[in-house]
Image 1 (tube, one colour):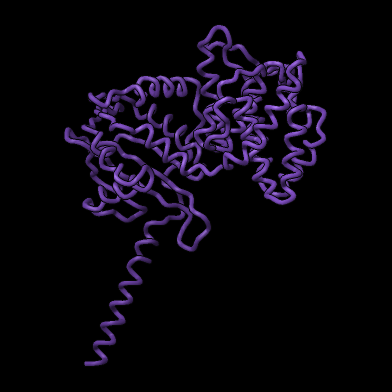
Image 2: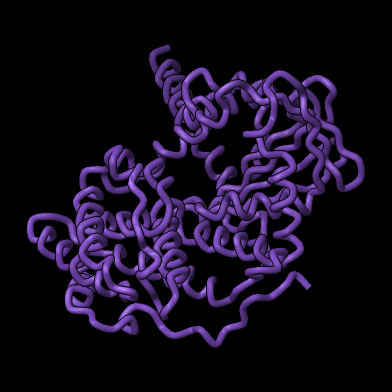
Length: 396
């Protein structure tokens, strides 16, 4: 009897330990279920822009239902842009027999089970809210009764506790006709603020206090140099990175460079970077208008703005997102007869992204940037000449 009990106990523990391992081995696979999406062409980007503008949730009334209509091609273009901040994730939307098939392949760190976590779910056509037909993780099919709780748990953790149900319930119906998907949607109150708050929590950048030190330096330099008709950005970079070098003696050089670059993005670029950093500027600094157009890169002030904003975007949203935002801006300009699509602007964007990435890559590279830029006298040390690229191009 005692022997039988021990055998039963061993069998129970074998199942208890072996079942999760067996599920994990079938859930994780050696190959991705999805290929990396190809390059987005100009028309794709224009379509995605128009779709985002047409159904901007900030403009939707929470008092009424809006029908969102989009082709799978448009949705995939938007998804590629939205997921650009996560380079190891590929997503795709397809029309399936019973509704919409949404796939995701996640490249995992080295492990003995496999390289990819492949997730596929089918959202069924439904006139009564969001209804999941199937969910697969690798080869494992998740029982239908577990799908909604899993989604609710995920959204509560990403957006905030208690936020999942209003988001799920905001989708009133889903319909598929040919390659076009129709979703009736009524946004819950505070959706945009909830998303912004969630994004801010997940973007780990320098503290407002660290950035403020460099921002105040830029303010002083701007006041001192404003009497001149033209000044190179090098006149700001040199003292900025000299300060970063001095502060790195008792700190982290990569973090100091990050704070310096974010101050640059805030001062020459866009005040909205404070949404990710926190309050850097005083009320007086926000209200006071300052002359900055005298600061140039390659004799152009717009290059300063492109460079600084893209560097800030690379640190807050990632390299891919920064590149796509820069390209979308030029696509928009292509329909503007005054400015047009400019490859030189994209050149300044890309250099800002590369600069931020390399200056914060590791401590060794960060110190090298500080050493070179603390004594920089020529823009060529950090910005190549690319003014021979085409610009002022129309959509045609």
